[in-house]
Image 1 (cartoon, rainbow, N blue to C red):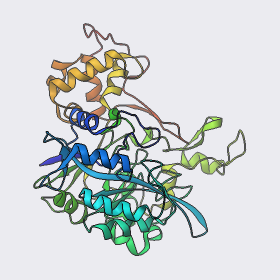
Image 2: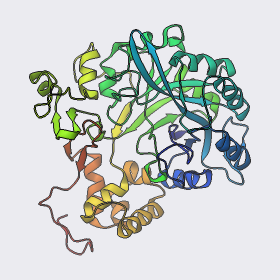
Image 3: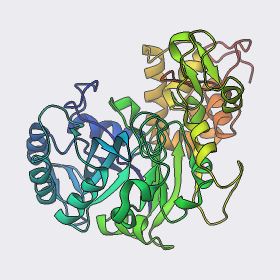
Image 4: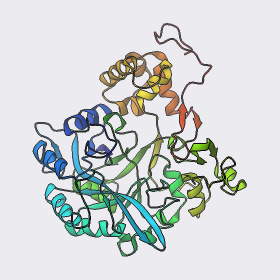
Length: 416
């Protein structure tokens, strides 16, 4: 069976996260999105653990559900920030930890509480080596696992240009063999990661890092599992087979990520890697070094050319969230009342956001929404979008309709 998973989200106990990120709301939006398996996020925070213990119940398949429901499935997750010195440099590495049961969560938390303060933030900052998180998690349970989060983000990741490493081995040393997957992050996609032969033995996965319910599923991983069990999820990552495997990932257009290209935000300088090289990475306005983005960093570490495509890797699809397509089609910004009305009509009509974005036939879409919105969804499926890459913390822009394309929201007279 196909199971769409988003294992990297945050609760209301993380900084800069919506107060609505509670189990009931997370479950509600997972169903709207079409996410069948969602991470709890923030399992190291004591108050959040108490809420999870009160509102979720564990099931025989190794997951959990909101009490009184059968879907979506939950699994226990947390993102941990490790800040430490190694190899003569300060390292800032974010990792997602996944645990099978609340009992394992508590064992992990007992060990981590000896290192740092787990109450200060749902995404705890700990002064320990990233490999220690792997050791602690797997000692708590061999079924717990660690995924390097948004692996290319300049400031807080495994391969980050500002505080990361050049290889998995350099970071994880004797724990490297326990890393079975890495997360692409919003600014990279699978083809960028395929260029590194050192990643041939790990699964490429994608999740949302959502700070609000509407951002859930903006990236996700589609698993093909014989049955929806934690054991099969683990097998899909560690020892994939035809029955249990990563089928594909659902991606941002990586250019939309806020660290895709190089640049200097305060001066409005946005450069491709080749432009950065021409300027010796120095901002022409202030003379400071620009922030080296994900594409540049991939170019530096890759041992394969751009465009390399192995035949045995899972596929991927690049999408734009449905509410953003609707807003673009209507010529408005943000989640306005009209946007949300159209969003709810589409979800009600076809079943979920992912059904609309990935699977619904053109006739189905046109039956539940305006022709211009249906056309926008189909354009995104075909990759017919205009892109302006993100840089130095500024999100890129992805447009479905060019400025000169006019349409009437009524749908009575459109271009299509």
